[in-house]
Image (tube, rainbow, N blue to C red; front, side):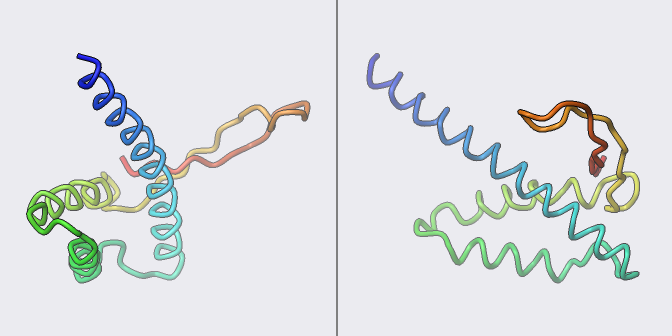
Length: 114
């Protein structure tokens, strides 16, 4: 059972890393969408999604995972295609505490894709 617990601990650690990377990715996705909106570019570019999928598959060491990776990456990109605004981010103005060590509150803009 110790071995199983160790393996599950490894999965938990990887999941924490994946969640952090997901948040980073979504933050950049919002910035890309905002840039495209400002430039009058279409938000959804299917050809770019195909490039992302092919690039991800080319990075695989174990090609047995190719179909699973394609499904994973497709699901990862789904929120930007299915948001009510057609992929455009919606920014919400919020008030949040200032960073540690500073007094007061600050205004932040939060990007929502849903």
